[in-house]
Length: 120
Length: 107
Image (cartoon, rainbow over all chains, first blue to last red; front, top):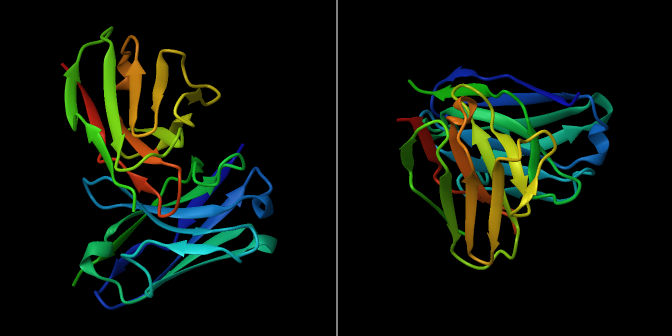
């Protein structure tokens, strides 16, 4: 069974940093591209970042470019998101989502999410 | 970036009703469209990929259609477990973009 479990969320002051992790199991992590997607309280879904299997292709939403860094450790089956210079508007549940092998832009499995609150 | 517009943003329906949700892309995305279902407090769940391909385990009352810029998600006979929020997402290119969501509520 595919499982994606996010961790690392919490309360942080604006301007602060946080590092999110996503532990993957139940599939061969190294053969799947991965994503982060977020959802502000009571709002819709916003794609945040994408990384391919070997970390050579990485994309970011304009809203986080220059502040967030996505990375992965295939040996540890983990996806990471380093978030710096956090703003109030970064407050959201952050989901780790797997890209389908048939089409990288389709997200076929999602974790349960971890809540990040940027507030003073 | 490709903008996705969903309508309606919310609707009330009864068990057994036929429900139709529409999604429009700001430019042609061929058939590169996915639909997700999200229940309160839960992660989104992929229902349909490539406009009309039902994911394994998804009931056949769900169907998708469309190509180019206009797409539709149809639930042929609404069941109690279908009350949720539905999102479309263009799968044509990065940055990935989602529609604003359609909340289907009990009438």
